[in-house]
Length: 112
Length: 115
Image (tube, helix red, strand yellow):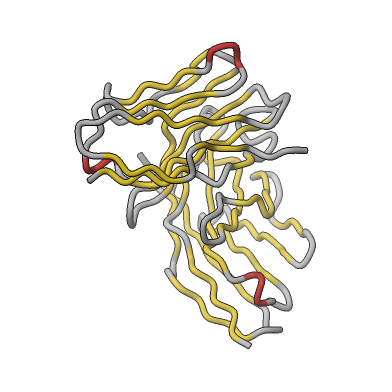
């Protein structure tokens, strides 16, 4: 099947800086996209989602941008904090499916 | 509200043995999903229940895996007999509605090691 992938496996940022995590997807039928954060020993935790009829959605300190033309998704974290250190997964599904397709994940490390 | 709970958190078994994983979804969530992540790979979908019915089991790797959700509440995933390649983290998730209308809530997973 078609896949969702991440550009970079690791990202290191300084505390207080903004972080941008990127994700590319290949399925043109994808209509729902979601970002999860996974801390060590825990399950994926929902951060933010976006449907394909939108190109931007904001949450608390996070923004998701969707560019359907180039099939690209990004997660922006403002004023990154040490507690943001985790692995971030993007995932998508299409209207006809039930399963989320996950990317490999990006490890975000926040340094003081 | 209590989250999705999974038991056990860790399991170490020998090749050929049987293991049963349990998932208790969030109360009121009709949709229950099993996913797994094997070492170095993406999190992969296994199957989806709506109440007690299997809606989609296209991700189940083979017939050594059996999932049940009797009564539409908790679910079990049995691996019999276990093989080395079954090692990984098995996640359960639940949601109120399906297909992205509401996000999936994941449990902390069961880490399965087959030796």
